Length: 109
Image 1 (spheres, rainbow, N blue to C red):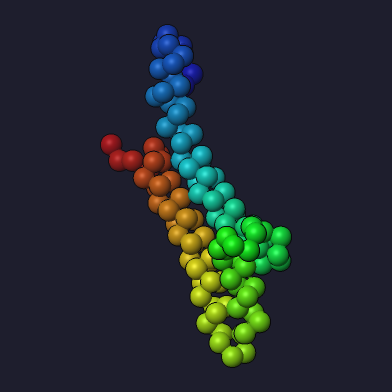
Image 2 (cartoon, one colour; image 1 turned 45 degrees about the vertical axis):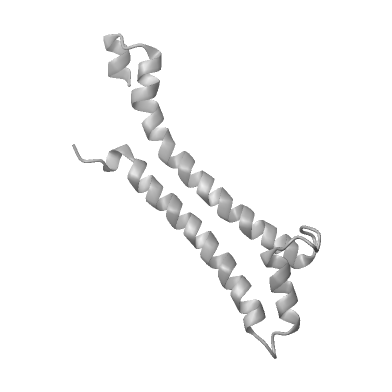
């Protein structure tokens, strides 16, 4: 970037060519991690009864409902928990894959 500025390259060209490609990968990773955090936070609040109102479906509320019947039908609590875990894992892996694709340091010439 300093060499481009010393040669006289315009600022918008430096931003588009050097700064933006290096900033996209961390932003994508943070966005996908934020989605996973939001899903986990909503499920935790719904599990505690502080989430969305009852007519609206929520994995946390479904998980809390399934705990009442855990001894008789354990799948009522297992499947919502697995759905939360797999969704968060999927978003994290998606972010990791997009980082690998968009990282300019990993590109071959």
